[in-house]
Every structure is written in structure tokens, then in C-alpha cells.
Image (cartoon, rainbow, N blue to C red; front, side):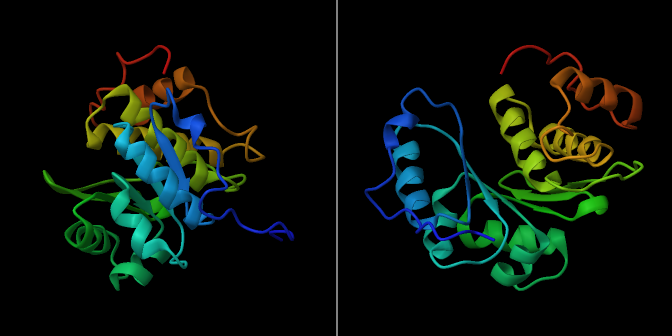
Length: 202
């Protein structure tokens, strides 16, 4: 359950945490505070990644304020009216002008942006526990943005990290290290991901 704590209202979030921030990741659970945080981040030139799981109150205002809308298939259906992930990503992009990604589990991820539309297949793994796979995807996506990788590379990396998490029990314990993810890509990607030389601190 979500408990009994009331949601943050505008003015209640401590936005000083954004000073020195390099990337802000928001979700759809605290939309009022998220709108305020996204506005502050954009004024500071900080990229904003939105984890859009479902269409909640306030999302119509929040979505266009984010640089990268990384959405579930459910959100794509609710917001864009399409069950096809690539079509949903394209429609979100057309509606907001933002880079849009729709994730589809083992099918991979689908992206639409100013440079066109594309997809990256998921990785076939022996699944043990999918808990947190979506959250891990968003975290990996933020890492890719911070690394300055191009979007196809970011999606490839995010797919890999989420797949690796599914092979391990537990949400946080299942998160791979950067080096583990890059080695997984080296062994399992049929494409040149371009991530191999990008080790080091974020």
C-alpha cells in the first residue's frame, strides 16, 4: 500500500537538492512537487527524465516539462491512445516535442525524437524476478544521458541493465554494476553498442 502520508504540495519540496544536480528523475506519484522540481531543474539547465507509469492527475502539465518521457506501455495507451509502443512513442513526441520512449518488457524499448523513430530489442535471459526492472531501466537511462551517449546506445544499455536485473532475486540486490552491464553488452549484443569504451564514474 502507499500508506497514509499525504502527497507533497507545491512549496513543500526542498528544491535546494537540485543545486549541483546533473540529472533529475521524476515519476508520476508526486506530480505537484514534480512540476515544481522540473521547472527548477530546467531553469538550471538540468535534464529531466520522467518515469511515466500511468496517467495520473497533473501529468498533462508535467509531461511537457520533462526532456525525456520514458513511459510504460500502459501510459502510452492512456496518454497517446495506442497499444503499439512505437506509435505511442511517436504520438507522445508529436504532442509534447519531447524525446519519448515506451518500454515493452521483453519486446524491448521504442523511441521517438527529433532525429526520428527507432527501437531496440530486449535481451533474452532466464528470468528469476522482475521486481524493479522498470525502475532499473530508468536509472540506466539516466546514466546513459549523463555519459553523453546517443539515444540508440542509451536504449541498448537500459535494456541490458533491466534484463540483468531480472536474472537476480530482489529489486536493489539485482542491480548490476556498470562494468557488469558493459560486459553483458559485449557478450550479448549483436550490434556495436558503442558503450564498451565508456567505463568510469558517472
